[in-house]
Amino acid sequence: MSELVPGGNLPLPEGAVTVRVPGPFDVSVLVTDEDGKVRGDADFVFYNQPCAPGARLSGDTLTDHPRRLRA
Image 1: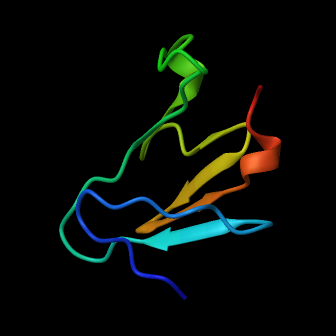
Image 2: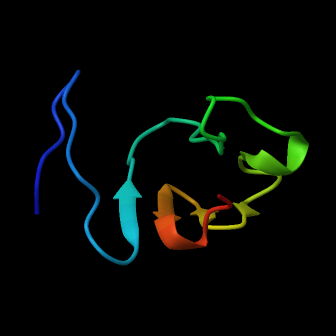
């Protein structure tokens, strides 16, 4: 497993990427297009809307399937 440090970049591995963020945090995800834009509410993943194509939030764990994200 690789550790991502602040300001760092790592290539994504093949398959699903799971990130766990323990603690008193509200985790949310924005799914963006190649221009860094969010198309709409369906691209915002948070406690009340826990999934979007390619991303799922379950408690303190985010699972991302890069190949399932929209192009």
